[in-house]
Amino acid sequence: MIMWPERKRFAVTLSFDLDGETAWESSSLGGRRLSLLSMGAYGRRVGVPRLLELLARHEVRAQFYIPARIAEIDPEVVRSIADAGHGIGCHGYFHERVDEQSAEQNWQILRDSKALLERTIGQEVVHYRAPLWEITPDVLSALIDLGFKTDSSLMGDDRPYLVGGAPGELLELPVSWVLDDWEQFAYSAEPAMGGVIETPDKAFSLWNAELEGMRAYGGHFILTMHPQLIGRPSRLLMLERLIERIGELGDAWWCTPDDVHAQWRAGALELPLHPY
Ligand SMILES: [Zn+2]
Image (cartoon, protein in one colour):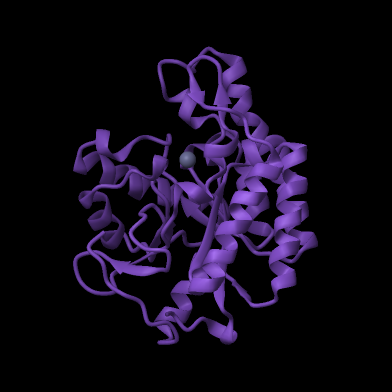
């Protein structure tokens, strides 16, 4: 069992993938289809400001993973997130699948995306989450090569672990389909995407059960959300209930990838090493 800082029983990270229009824009499907593009635009236009307000009210620092293309179409939204004190991580350029690129393409996309985000916010960007959580060995190597500190795309544990060629080169913050709002709320009629649109109560019940489990086992509750989905009014109310519930428990260590990395660097966290 991991000994969490401040003698807390478990860790909690709220993360948001600000995909915006990128997934549509880059595919043959979406370029001209304004309705599809607008589903993504809702996330940065409406979802993000409401999320920033909600997080500020509860004094929660979260992590946003952003395709670098968003910094070109809407640099202000990226800066507003950084200015509010939240962590910024790289999420590809066009939200491209890394397993469909060559190793050279992946390396260039990572280097250029990191640089573009850094120019936009005036801070180093050293955290990464692969689009669609699809990651390949060459991307892990490129992350290490380019000075990234953490990744959050793998599912090999429910506590942070070290991954990569040599011990301690890259810290992994593992995700899970259980803790993803995409499974609950994503829907498009054509192209067919997602399934049944679940109620906020159903998602709350699922996430709250996982929260109890993470608390019992001393795990790291890392919730992945998308501003275009969680930013709908009914779901924001549900997220607020969840934040309040975590607060009431009183024994969660709220953290971002920066916090976990700093604790590990300071020797305060003992983490296992896994190949993936
Ligand atoms: Zn994404």
